[in-house]
Length: 179
Image (cartoon, rainbow, N blue to C red):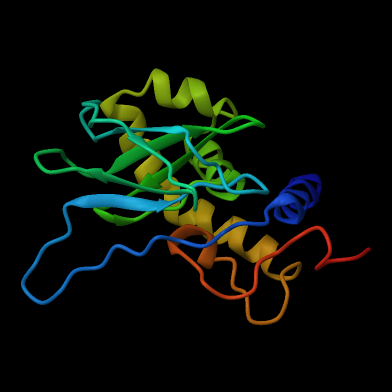
């Protein structure tokens, strides 16, 4: 019950959740991991780091004025762990393939549950191939756990899954939900 309350509380502080979609046109494969970084507000001007399944780092990216980032993953092996530090902490996400991977407190919660480690920065900085495999293997079940817990607190038309892959509809703000 306490975990559900914590997760629902995190939703209330998350205001910017839109995603920089990264799709592919016919015949063109996606070779980037991109998304939006937020922590209750957009994370702008921050360095975004990425490590692949073998612990190899990609070239860093910087979030834009809209919180979006894009990192070229050509030559790297999925899955990818992505991290950014905002004003309120360090946030991580798992990109199981190239494509869209938003970074926010919700994705950080899922990665922490999947890694069985609440220290997001430690998970990223000390990442081993075995650890990222464990996170990847546990990610779907932990995502389902978190999204089920969140769904009851979200406004109509917003799905918890949107926080992982991008969302362009109404956003949650401090004024949108009242106790």
